[in-house]
Structure formats: structure tokens, C-alpha cells
Image (cartoon, rainbow, N blue to C red; front, side, top):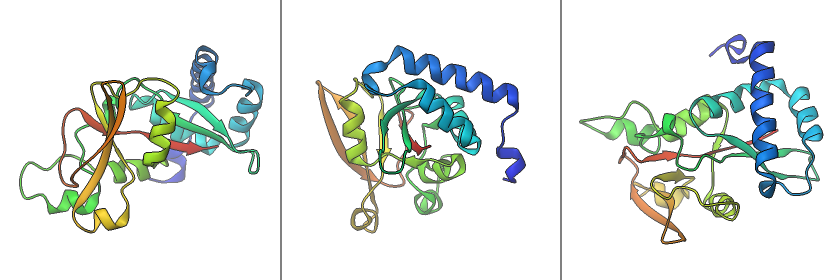
Length: 188
């Protein structure tokens, strides 16, 4: 997609920043000790990242600040929707898995969507960190970054929360389900 299509209008940027600010203020437990004015200044200085955050928002991810890297000054956003984002479900793991399906191919893959959005899939560790901030994926599941040695054997991993416990599972990378999507992360 040309760069010009990955830019938001002033009105879209303002609306997104209002949405992010409101979510930030309603969920202070996710980012204790952080100040919205500093996050907003970082967003204003990195408007190209706003496009990715808007994509997260439009697909149902409800992105929110979950951390701050003091060395780089970057803020870390994760999808914080209660369930795996609706606009990113029914996808297999990656392009290789998508192309390997002979019948009933999904429309897309988690890895391709993430690249198109300018975000990364959460790692298993990041997913578990997110679950310390709330209870997510109690009815859905989310693909997470899969180690190469598992992927080379045709598998991929996903996580969810059931019975007040976070589980990691495996499946064929070409599988897809209506209740499985992915959560993204973005550094700003």
C-alpha cells in the first residue's frame, strides 16, 4: 500500500487520540505510573504509528498502553479487547499455511495481516504478561509467535484463558476457527 494510504487525516488522528486517551484513563491498572500527556506527545511525534493503531482499533483490538521502555523511550501498545479481535479471526497462521490448504482456504493469515497493519503478533511471554493485566480470551483464542522449530514441523501455537488459567496449545498452522484470531503489539 502506498505511504499516502497509510496516513490518517487530522480528523481521524484526533478521534483516535481521544479514543486512546479515554481507554488509557479507564484502565490505569495497565500502565501504572505512566502519564497520558507523555504518551500523547510520543504519538504526535510518530504519526505514522497512528495508522497502525487505527488498524488495531478498526479490527476490534482496543489497543492500550501496557508498558514503557525507559532506554528507548518507546511506549508499548497491545490489543486489550476482552476477546480476540473480531476483525482478525478465522485466519490460519501464515502465508505458507494459507497456500498449503487445498480446500476451504481462509481469506488471510495472522502473520500477513499483522505485517499489513504494521504490528507484530504477541509472543507467548507477552501474551502471559497481558493476562496479568486482566482476563482476556475467555471464549476465544489468539495465535502467538511460533518458534521456528515448531513452525518447520507444520505447527503453530495459540493461547487462551480457561478455568482462570492461561493455556498454550498447538495446532496445524493451516487450521483456522471462527473463535481464533491474533493480538498485536506496537512500539511507539
